[in-house]
Image (cartoon, rainbow, N blue to C red; front, top):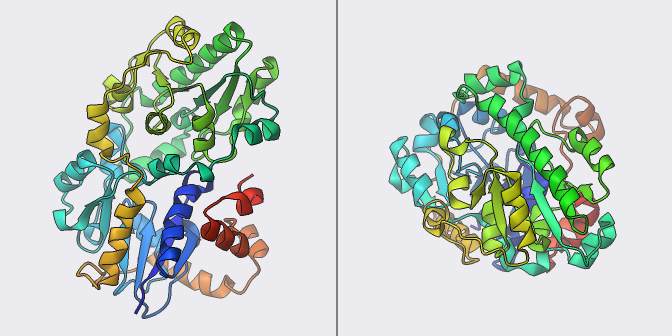
Length: 421
């Protein structure tokens, strides 16, 4: 009996390209697959052998929110753990908790550092697989990315000018008190000064971009707001209105922009790690101590600068600014950048196909909210998608099935262009 592989995604632009690589390999092997949004998971096929890949799993709240339809007995449930590099104050939340996480699931680690953290947190070694970061494989497949000419034509950029990419990562500058209470309830207790420091960094980063645009009018600067959380592109539109060479562009996978940027400048975004793998120049700009205070390794791996003058000097030395990275620390977190991380994940599929011993034996008991969710889902499932979205139920756009099949078969996102735009 073949194993149905169900891949759950959360943020379309971040996860669809590696998903295409993974699903393409499954298709070539004749393994049935399904792509579902994590907030719109189906109950699967009753009695079927399945492997369910979740983008994250933190505690029983996620079981209640995403797995409430049940039917897990005999299926493999895998936590891809999309947030592995983290600030120390978030560790108690980001590491998977609860009996189901410790005894019934498989957890993926990009490299030895997260594996060590999982072990110290009580996850048994036999339930951990080091798979590498799936997004890194995208940079080994240029056929998945738009060309420079395509990007320039779609967004009014000059293909002959250098492009500077600035991924914004200031979500925590926009949290509300209610957001903070919700995070604290799940053990993400932000350290004193965390939110305030993020807001100051955002403001200083924006000042740096203004200076960059003014000092290099022949360069085009692309500001990309974070695709998930509290930050939004509209919060920065006024900046672009003041400078002709500053563009706010948040669509399509960031790999397209990293691959074409003469330089990527991050605050503490893991997009900087992708730029390293892509072989593209990347630095971090941290106007005041932050990663040292809150313990975050991105800014230890990248060359990090404190002043605007230092950043402008790096830009003046492009295209070869002579940057040096801490590859040893990078390897501690990521280990693999050989373009074979999808293959390492496929080894888990092989385990499930072989009917290994890690299928779910004891599904978690439903909480009272899960019972209500299940009842509501049964009542509203026949409604059209539009009506469900109005009710706030599974209001997540799914890729058109025919276009998705073509994209997986031909290993290209072009059939999904309208969906991604």
